[in-house]
Each structure stands twice: as structure tokens, then as C-alpha cells.
Image (cartoon, rainbow, N blue to C red; front, side, top):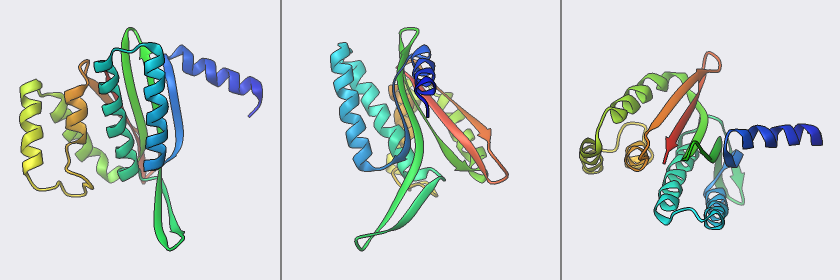
Amino acid sequence: MQASDGFQFRNYLRDRGIIFSYSGYMTEEVLTGIGGALRTKMELDGTDRQIARTIFSIFVEQVQNVIRYSAEFEEGRVQDDDIEIRYGVLTVGLKDNKHFVSCGNLIEKSKVERLKESLERIQGLDKDGLKTLYKDTLRGETPEGSKGAGVGFIDIARRANHGFDFDFSEVNDEYSYFMLNAYI
């Protein structure tokens, strides 16, 4: 990349209110490192502590989603350990007096409809409905294909006091690109 391209990219991000951007393979170590940088940036900006905690919590959920579910990954063996790293894109910013945390990754096309239905259901709930669904999900069986308790998107919806939106873009016959934007 040439300096002029880098500067144009920087301006593109700034024009969209993006204060932090990461594109690449994500691991727990990357989560910790980015999380530390994000906390420091919010402290320097004087971000309200409650808002900063909310941004951080949503950031963690978004990155864990990539770490667990991105369809774009590499795997192998390193020092007798099986390793798997997954690729995603994360942005955090401030636009129109709202903070946002956005995350995107490839998903298998066969999973789009089920994920869309689940997110639409979550979007349609009020605070009480989200609280009930959160508790019911924690008490219930782990959802099929889930690598956690299945409450990540519900938790994001509960914390995103200005809501969330999502989108899918078909990449090819096998994959779509999934993007989730949470607004604080």
C-alpha cells in the first residue's frame, strides 16, 4: 500500500466516525490487546464510564462471535497444540452522538436464514422481553451449533440502548458476509 492509499483509507475511516478498526485473524490474545487499547482510548476521550463499559461489553461479544463462528479460518498444529484462528473485521466509532461497535465476518450461506430469523426476533423484543429471553436461554439447552450459552446477541441487544442492525451480503454460492452494528 502506498502512503497516499493509506491516507485515503485513514480519511475514509475518520469520515465515518471510526476511531478504532481491526481487520484480521482474531484470537483471545488479540481480544485482550485490542480491549486494552480501546479502554485507554475511551479514558483519554473522557467517555462516560457506563457508556465505556457498555461499549467494551459489546466489543467483547462481537469479537467472541468472530472467534467462535467466522467461516473464514485457518487451522493447524503449533507446538503440539491444535490451533484455529478466525478472520473478521471490527470497528468502533462515534457518529451523530452515538457510539457504535460493528463487526463482520463470513458465514456459511446455509446459516443465514436461521441467524436472520433469530436476530429479527431479538430486535422485536422490548427490555422486559429481552430480559426474559436471556434468562430462558441461560436455563435452556445450548442451541444447536452454538459454542457458548447462546446469549451473545441477546446480550448485545440488551446493552445497545440505541438498538442494533444487521445485514448479509452474498459472497458466492457457499458464503455470505454478515455484519452486525450495535449503537450505544
